[in-house]
Length: 121
Length: 110
Image: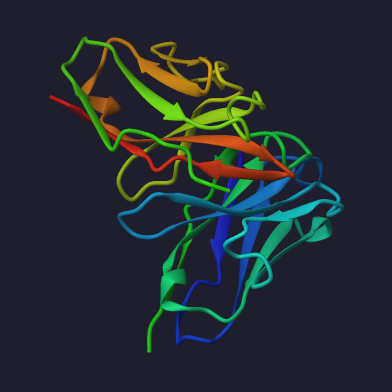
């Protein structure tokens, strides 16, 4: 069974940074692209970025490019999201999701339960 | 990249069929065949129900089906059940290894 467990969310002040982690199990992690998606409470889904199986391809939504960074460690079956210069608008539930295959092009087929970032002064 | 356009809400009665549209542009739905649909219950993670326009993952009911027209994708749910009451999101590949979601549609089963 695919399991994705996000962690690292917290209550932080504007301008601070956080590193989110997603621990994967139940599938061959290094065969699949991984993605990050966020959801402001009560609002819709926003794709943030994706990383290919071997980290050769990393893509970001225009809204977060330059401020967010995705990486992965296949030896640890984990993917990470570094979020910098946080603003109140970044308050959201952050999900990691598994790609159907190694390319970020294909669909997101399994999701974790999310980790919450709350940005407040 | 712009979000795909979905109706904010749709409703139907048990046993009926409903269709949710997802409108895009030549930069997404028209060009690429990578449209997915997700079902999300309150306070739960999204679940993939349709991918590549019309394919169903293993375990998803055949009451869910997807289709494509000129510049839109559609999700049809037949034989509506109260369990189908949820939010539904479309998503499309938009090139350059990027994806975008629709704004979401709340389905109410009356």
